[in-house]
Amino acid sequence: MREKRNGEEEESDRASLDPTDSLIAEELECPVCLEEMRPPKRIFSCSNAHLFCERCNDASRLRSCPKCREDFGRSASSSPSSSSGRAPARNRLAERWACKIFS
Image (tube, rainbow, N blue to C red; front, top):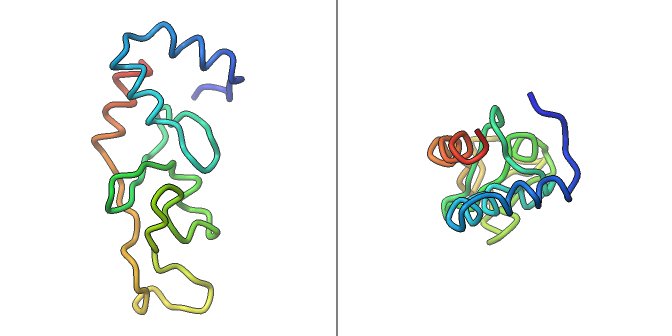
């Protein structure tokens, strides 16, 4: 597992990628914690395919998508069976992209 890296090192890594890979690497940055979703992190998405990392998905404070604000139906007072929104799903395609981009 890699250590957390500073922003300058991450930017230089992206600069060394070809343009398409660089765009994908930008999409693989969690909009909540702003860390790159490098393997072995699991990646989740809302129904609109906006990505975020497993740690942020597991946090009880994430009740909606950080980009489109789709409601996940999570609240302290509601049970899982009474939730109104769709729960985030694991995005295995994004995980495969992360393996190819960051390897």
